[in-house]
Image (cartoon, rainbow, N blue to C red; front, side, top):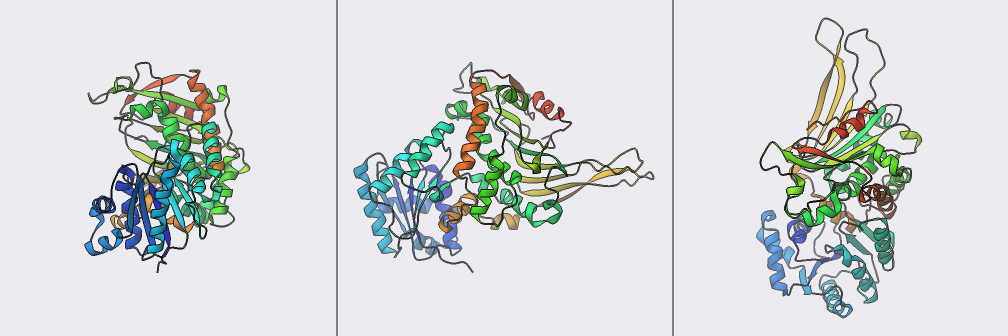
Length: 486
């Protein structure tokens, strides 16, 4: 039995693509499930001049594919209102304040305000400042700020943004969104680790040989060259999504499954992450750029629309992370992400050490592997040693697997639905905190500095492959190999 959540959410960027595709359908799902009932309100705001009826039609269109009962949808839409607003104009906040207070009175919401910033990052600090100075924060209940990525473009810019936000909000009121943390199979990492003594006891250097995180994409840069050529795979995928997944894998067991203890456990791992110097960046990281492929559709990156002819942007990154912790002494954490690869997949592979028992046979026991497939369809696979059917006592590997059923998939909350719900409940477990963000930036900044100075090789790889040969050699130097071959 779910309990009603009383809250008022203001969506900055309320007419944007993200709001229409993800945010309003997510809030509607919370309404259909009973988390939102009578005492909630949604205020949309953007520069676009709309009246309430026009805005409600926008919401109606955005949820039409999720509507089974039109009367229910109309009751939901009645909780929406809109005010056009310039986020850079202090005087404009009076209009927004009036709309928020009207909605709070109409639906009997005492405090409990969430401000969702689905706008360009350069406005984050400005909005936070004016929310406080112009009196839009509630005097009772809670005030929380949801922030879309990117959170800065370097450690310095992220720290500056953090300082701006903390002038109006405490860090525990900031909910930094990384939608990968809302994915069901990322959340399954904790269930597998801590819910099964067989893995809990073996989640350390004594049993694990290496850990691998792969985020591979088959698409190229498409029409995003304006942004992507300034970010590359390193900033677009490694600094945020990949590092947050690694946090769940490397963390100590939390004292309790609360957001405070989960963050403390993650931070113990992040604080032990080794930051590389120039020589170590070249030793432990590989950057590359996709070239042509077998298909005529696979153009080299440098031939893509709006990509500078002399670009040295990385469309592929592979690297080894090291944690100075007794649990992980000598255990490499390998990460890789890239575009124009052989297959689209986000996955974690935990490679266990091979057994040492000698069967006296030609085929000795191999490394066991636990794989968590996050996208495109969730699955858990376990590769184990078993006896071959031959007369001789040889071993072979067998596969045990589970795949998310269509029924489970239908009932699984979308990441944005889950994150909005968690923010309403004040649960920060699946959001990045400042310590984790800052360490990720310091780690990535050290790599970026080497690349910006062009003091590292820029490999090329064939479109449709799994990256450059140097990526395979990186692991081979430790006697390892990528589990996922595409």
